[in-house]
Image (cartoon, rainbow, N blue to C red; front, side, top):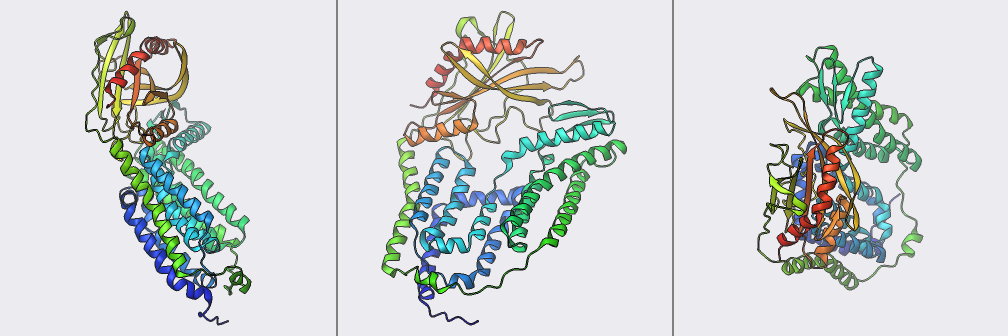
Length: 520
């Protein structure tokens, strides 16, 4: 059926479309640094390379809906305005807390929410899936890596034992008669998971019409890569064991993994295609929709666009004002004291050769302290003027890097520590230094970690980021630090007892050090 384009809605689109494209351009200009950071991650990380194809796919999906959009009258939405304002504020908080993922998610949210804010909810509903699919361009998902690694290790060890192969496991490392294996980032399966979920979601949208089938297939595309990665890890270890470590070691380890994953995903799509539903014929939208959506004048649209531009500009202006309030150029200073409270005196730090991998701190020191036969190491790293390249809470900061040739983190958890007048939660870990010639056994250390956020102690990454953002928003600055104490593990929890005694005696002194280092 031929539909005339000379309708009120088509007339409205003629001047609304350029306005929308202009606002989109302004958004890209104002937040160019965030958009650039997203593209850089696409280019350097194989996990997120698919991001390059997401925007073209979104444009193509919207283009497929052009016949339906022609019959909708664009009209600004108050709900869209509120949501866009919230996204802009979220970007500001993300910048203040130096959380790249929040900034990037907020930026893409602003791109998406420009549609309902300027064009209306009916237009947004018509292209709801393409708009939602744009979020796959955000390079997020690696937060699931630690849990995926644990699950992979759990399954691999269980499957090996069920296969009759004896396994000794410590953390993410395990030993079988033919050699040593460990689950590292590449074994987590997060790449397979993100790739499967992205492609599976698009497949479900294009091949199914019912919501239930789409949801089921998306759920399958989420579960299948996880289970497939478990099987992949088990089969690689088994193949290495049976071949005397001649196969499935080194580069071919990863090649076999991708081949196996490709076969599994192909089978998933082949099976899913049996339940495909034909796409309904695109017809004109009922005229009642047009009648219920009266158009507004170009002048009114100009005012709306101006208000939207103000909303987009405000976070940048607020950030500039906050930066000027904290414009000091002084460098924080941290000096290791020779004595601490209750007789703890400076000495050589235990675990010689190990230092926490906290990057680009403004100031730091590492020192050992002893009292009688007790020995404790203290590491402080102070952060000021945090940003993309200097931030306290980051996936780049860790007790031990996974490629460290000597040190391995085995266990992790948390516990409450009673201090004079209060109780705090600390993050716990156990480190092992591999035995070398001349050593009788591995060295093991108990480690406690806690964040100091402008006077507040917390062991939570999320709370640390939240306090940092709040302090910056209130003009108090973003000065923060990590406090790490460690001691030889010993027998019967001796390391825990040593650290507890040290923290009970010296937490106040450590906080005073950090307050004095704080930039005034």
